[in-house]
Image 1: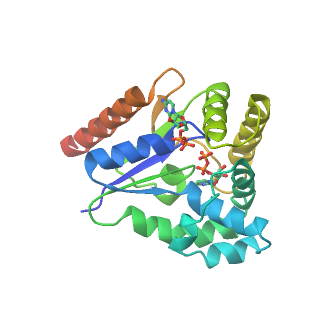
Image 2: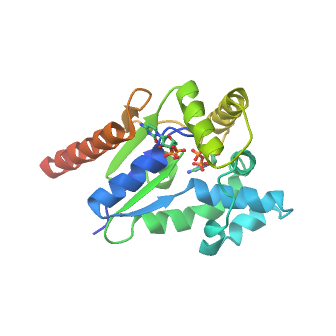
Length: 207
Ligand code: CDP
Ligand code: CDP
């Protein structure tokens, strides 16, 4: 049986962390859709035309090192504004979402465009300062040389680009449950997400 959990939100809101924990809790498969755009962004930086890169993307491209850097994040958000790139990645995401055994997908447009029929939708957010602080700490822990103000400016730039593009802009689905993680640690955010999914499943069973 298929059961799709859609988790959307801006950069470093905690989507990936929550998605992995929710998938493990329910025994579902997980797809970080940001990695698809990062892989295409990476290829663009290497000189490949982005629409072609998206059309020819293979699962091994998601295993490449260095997809998590700030430069690849910016490139990802640029290629993500190209409608043909988004279209080329659609079927793979939809097939993943409807696989047997349940799936969690996290990204920007899962609840609005990829899986509008998802059984449960969450929109995970946090203030730009809190998100930039988290991303800054991750980058520094990974050995990157940067400063908080730069990461904050990049976070705001990417938020703006993602929310204002014409095709599949970042926004909560009307039926998404909102989780603000600004003042939640990982454990509390995960617990809130699991309760929200359980509440929504119960509503569906009761009809
Ligand atoms: O990890 P982080 O939240 O920083 O970014 P990501 O989820 O890896 O996404 C990188 C970029 O891909 C985003 O800034 C979006 O522009 C784009 N993206 C998208 O357009 N749609 C998705 N479903 C996922 C990511
Ligand atoms: O996937 P997304 O870009 O939304 O965020 P992430 O990569 O899951 O999380 C970014 C960082 O914030 C990670 O280092 C998490 O450990 C941390 N964090 C979190 O995810 N949730 C909280 N409630 C607190 C911190």
